[in-house]
Length: 365
Image (cartoon, rainbow, N blue to C red; front, side, top):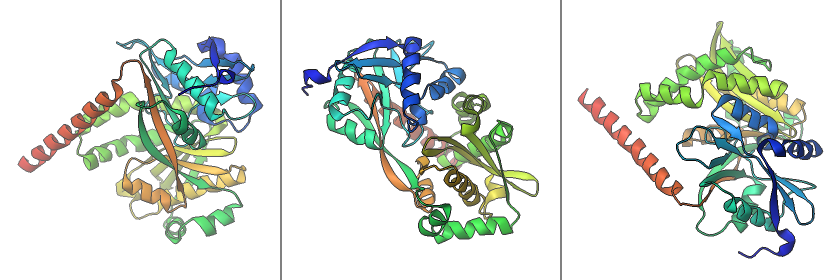
């Protein structure tokens, strides 16, 4: 791939030295996705073992561009970078570059990719979504390892009444009304007060997911505490403040389901969800939770509600009942030594082996 001289770029600053320019670029464009802001990087670095390694680029025309990036601290292998790391994705609201004066062109993206590949370090993992994903697909060098995913995004343009009548299916409308008739009450908070309630539901969900996926419950509990501890939810609520809303559905004084929704500019993003399936089953609580969050997003002038990446076909169908449509998301690995593909294959084989052992244990039980 040949990039014209006019689109060559160079690294001007890294990490904390890039912070001031990064904040300036974000302040110039209120529509900048949350995943591309210093605040989201602060959430990651404050609650996980990462440090800020953001790159500030300068084009020959003087234009500044930012790649939000973090570095794993205390890792056995140095030079492992992520934008963002695993378990910090925000659906279609993915990373990519922040550019001064408008979106980066495909030629600029190609030049930036080349420069990132030249930087020291073994690997940079970059997640891009929506229009960024389409632009990256057109210029990414051949043989770059990537994983194609999809997010589901609901268009909120028009009043909530339009979303309710034209985009929600009759099933969502019916279940929302049923939830209210059955005494489900929804509470919201953006001070962090409801984080412990949500975390209680999340731990109940972890046990259910382990059983559904054929994984050892003890292993799933351990992984969830490493990847999604309560302190992580609390940190996001603290750093983002009013941009982070916890929604809890109650019935008979007991919490039965909850979601965390993040909002910035034109986007609202469903980040995490959990429920006590035994208590929530058949109540319509999940439909009512999202209905309330979507109505609030419409009232705040948001233009889209991102349901995030779907792990199962069941979740994909559920999100589709709200009228959400699929948006491309790609995970790219810019590597000096190509190991990501082999690691993914080993990870998949390990999961398959665990399921097989669990099936044998149940059969012999």
